[in-house]
Amino acid sequence: MGLLDKVQKQKRGPWNAGWYSSVVSEELIKRDGSIQATSDYESSKGDSRNLCLIISSINQGMTQTNEFRINYRPEALFDEARRNEVIADREKNMRDHISLERLKDVEEAFGTITPNGNGGIDAHRMIGRECRAYLGVFQKDPSGGKNPLPVKKSEFDKLTEEERGGMFNMVTQVGPAKAEAKKP
Picture 1: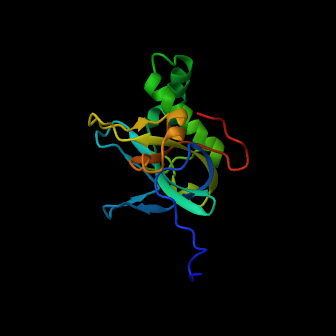
Picture 2: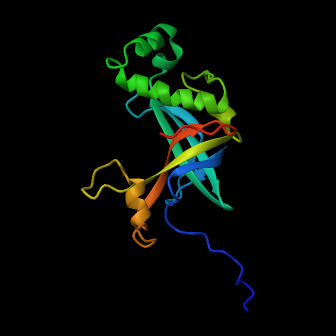
Picture 3: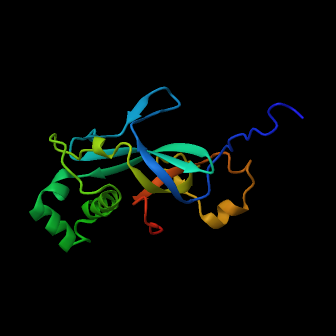
């Protein structure tokens, strides 16, 4: 018997889609060496903002860290008249309404969203807070498209570990740590 026979190797590839106990981390060091921090910042176009939470999820002693991003327009969140307009007419204001739905999940997970004094959300107060995160399974678009494609659970379950190699997880929703969160 070898000295390391009882050591379990961390499984490569994506985890099954589902809800996982998680915590908001301060930063993530990416494969290219760059650092992404939990933060709120202006979009490259300057017409909206991005909330980026670094979510570390735990599954049977293994940890996986992912970015969770929400693009939103501050006026749809912080301006009460605009927010009411978005809520009243979802079809006309679809982009802002979807952002508010996702931000509502964040608020349910971490408490009232507060401004950061710089036009955005105070993301730093969420660092270290527990939550549940839904990790979906995705694959790169084989046609070269920018956005990853979701993989259906029924398809994923039929694949071998080797066939799952090019797939990955993304956080698609967050929820409160204590409650059983709804399925997206």
